[in-house]
Length: 172
Length: 172
DNA sequence: TCAAACTTTCAATAAAAATTGAAAGAATCT
DNA sequence: AGATTCTTTCAATTTTTATTGAAAGTTTGA
Image: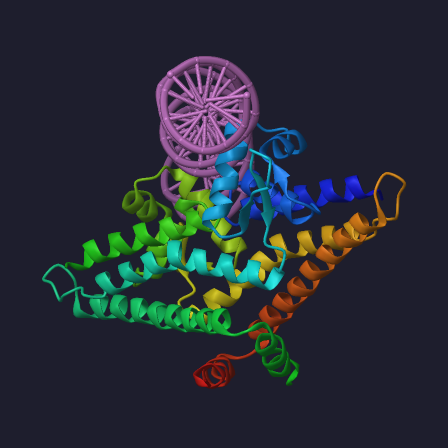
């Protein structure tokens, strides 16, 4: 397989993966393109390689910068902007976890806290209310747990991450 | 807050969470509804409570059964089918992880393996090719790692999960 | 200050995804 | 077998989301 073909396949696969996880396909593709490009790319480069419009390229690069996954790179003497992706995969994973936590986990946890305040009412049996509260409580506990796990992993440096976690996992 | 209101809020929140993670909003809502319903519900119940059509209710219940998150429940003397959700949150998380692994992680890992077979070519410098191979290799390593972590957690029983992992996390 | 080079915005459009509802299919009863 | 009750399917439609492209905005150099 030639390099260009391999890059295309990776970009396509990364795009598909993204859309399965709620990230727009194009955003994931722009990310993939920057990941496998040796140097930084201009908006024109991105437009050409992915066959997308200027507006689309701009919006997605911007979104990736919001996620912290892409950086603007300015070259002396050049007016236009170039973009390059964070190449350290561990950092990439960390940034994605952080962002998704902030955007999606935090809101649902707020909702869980709210609905748990349900009060005994005349239109529902105590059993029903109790079953509900218990279910919500379980979800909260699990979410708290997942949250702490993620936070711990995020804070941990890569060496600790790999060594301790690998050790833990090779047990049994 | 009354029980009905609390249930609605939870269903709405769960739906939003689902759609942010690539699960159709309605599927997540049906799941939420069954999670917080004391007993099993019929298709009619689901249609009424979520205000959706019969076809929609049927398709989403079916999809949830494919995920292993919902079970059919037959009542003696009743012809129609009732549905109830798996209530153990740890099992829910496990089932979701399993399914997403199968559907989305496995395919991208296959692609990574393929594109890594890139060969030196006249149209690309060895440096470019090497940088690409290294990037893909890093992603593979990370994916393998995440994969093993997930597999380990899935196999582990809940007690081990909670106690060992909690201990690990309360360190530092 | 003007023009050139580039970036950003956003209303219109296109594409993708979800939903409906009615018809066809199954299962069960008389 | 025929009637009844419930489930499934799927083409048509609606809704949501992504994309375009041209106009407006910004920055820099002459």
